[in-house]
Amino acid sequence: MGYSCRRDAQDTLAVISRRFATDGNPNVWTIGTVERKQYFFERGQENHDGAITGTLMVMLPGDFCRSVGSVRIGPDGTIERFPKLIARDRVELEHEARDLRARNPHLLSSWNVPL
Image 1: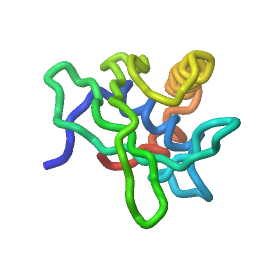
Image 2 (image 1 turned 120 degrees about the vertical axis):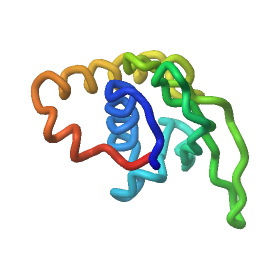
Image 3 (image 1 turned 90 degrees about the vertical axis):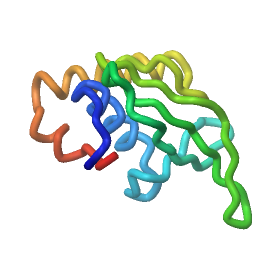
Image 4 (image 1 turned 135 degrees about the vertical axis):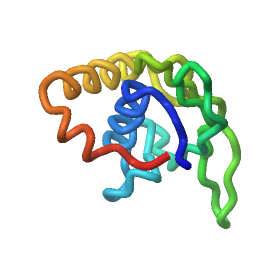
C-alpha cells in the first residue's frame, strides 16, 4: 500500500519538487537565494484529513543530515508550514499548482513523485 493524501496536496508537493529539483533530481532540493543549501523531504505518517506532513532535512558534509523543521501541506494544497520558503515563494507555488490543475492536469500528474 502507498501513502494516502488528497490530490491537491500531492500536486503542490509535485510543484515544489519540480521547482527546487537539484540537477533534475526531484528528491534533492536546492532552496535559498543567498545560502543555496540542499535539502530533502522525509514523509511523515498519513493524515486522516488528506494533508501531507513530514520533515525538511538539510544535507551536511560527510553524508549527514539534520532536521530544519516540519512541513505541512494542507488537503486543499495550501502550504501551511515549510521552513526555508519565504512567503512569496509559498504563494507562487500554490498558484502554480492550482493553475496547472486547471490548465494542464496531465503535465502536473507526470510530475508527481510516489510518496
